[in-house]
Image (tube, rainbow, N blue to C red):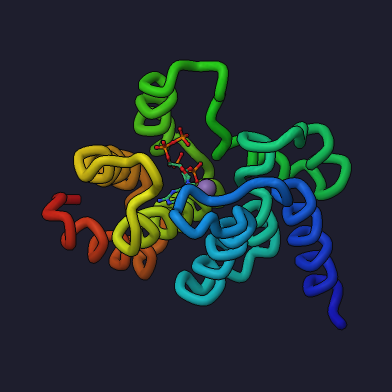
Length: 179
Ligand SMILES: Nc1nc2c(ncn2[C@@H]2O[C@H](COP(=O)(O)OP(=O)(O)O)[C@@H](OP(=O)(O)OP(=O)(O)O)[C@H]2O)c(=O)[nH]1
Ligand SMILES: [Mn+2]
């Protein structure tokens, strides 16, 4: 086996252990790890991304935000570049939700190209998920508001990967949201 394949297995195993107790918000309570794996798969299969550090960061992208994982732990295990990309896509959960959402819109254009790729794939996965089924407790209005906010974030990521941006546009069109 080549070393990149081994490294991706190491990374997906780390993410799976960290997210092992978490479930998605859908009625079936899908294991959370399906999301980071799906985000990495969108980058590779749909975005044509081969940069191993971007694929690793995709697998790890919610570990610091949503589990006990620290940035130092990621740096020790996976190196400074992967740790930095994850840090760039990590929301500060100590801030009020409205502020967090506002900061994503503000920060998106200033992220590195690698972080922008992860953000595009994360949004594409979540919007497809929302078009497939509504999370438990979400109203139709909340779903629509998520699309409107996500479009503001994605506007700041334009010019990063045309294949992913076109697929995002399809998702927004389904909701009548202009990109
Ligand atoms: N669509 C959908 N989302 C789900 C589901 N289960 C968990 N999520 C997660 O919920 C987040 C969106 O929900 P919000 O209420 O807007 O955000 P919050 O979790 O940060 O409070 C996403 O976080 P994120 O990946 O960090 O992305 P982002 O929204 O912060 O960019 C998404 O991954 C599900 O079943 N469907
Ligand atoms: Mn995510």
